[in-house]
Image (cartoon, rainbow, N blue to C red):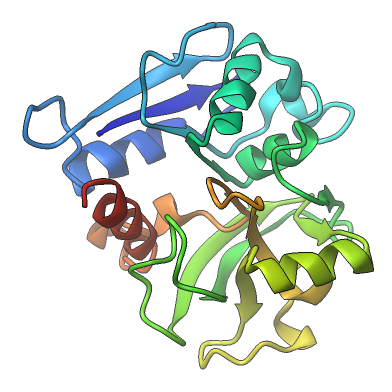
Length: 237
């Protein structure tokens, strides 16, 4: 299995993601495991990767809107083409914003309601277990995963949200440590406490919390590993 991690000017979570994939999940360059490659944003080849990951950070300094400029990087044309053919694409934080700007995911990420950058641990709960990134998550488990964003307020119109809920496109919602989904635990004002979504075809995924920052025992929290275990369990099946 070959993973491609796209790096934009301003990406700052790319090496975290690569570390988790290579050293924690064992995707080294090996016949028996997989490979992880860096994809510079000006490249026009995805190097035959099976899964493309857009990491967090501040692409192009978050000028205009977060992800609005990165969406036009040369490699995104290939990412859009890849996703259109059913290829798996996963965006975290800024990567999620870029995917929304590119039209690969529904909705938009707005400024946090408190108009402040928020960096802290939060809890999220998977809303279904039939997608690439949620299949190995225990039912009703509240995952402790950190956020670090100023524009993580997910929004979509009522009709679109209704369809997304019906289609199982809501991946994660913010909750408390017991799994209760309430307005009080919403860290950024996201509509319906939404923390992550996917497209209709369920091959493009985005979330604001950073699972790669909660996947190493050295950090005292490995709840994020459930997402990576989900990916590997399905693609290697």
